[in-house]
Length: 124
Image 1: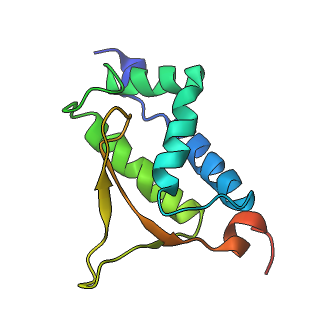
Image 2: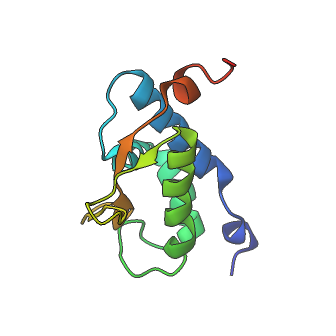
């Protein structure tokens, strides 16, 4: 196994968070913000190359165990980075959505984000 591929690509995660923050600040937040940010990043060939290097395979193929490490991290860091509130059903269960043909296979829906955290992070 390639030693470089074993290193977790924090810049891949950071770019997703930054894109999600930009989407929110630009007034384009919706419950699918996690998917939207990752889709936008996957258009960037350098991002996709780094992601592919980490998962050691096709970024769009399901069943890769290395994706089980990075994909949940992407969603969690995006949620934290936007101060997101998870959307829940009437029973208090987190709402998730499955997708096909994307880098991720499922993601958690967001109810809202914290504008102060995203658009003015230095405000007290």
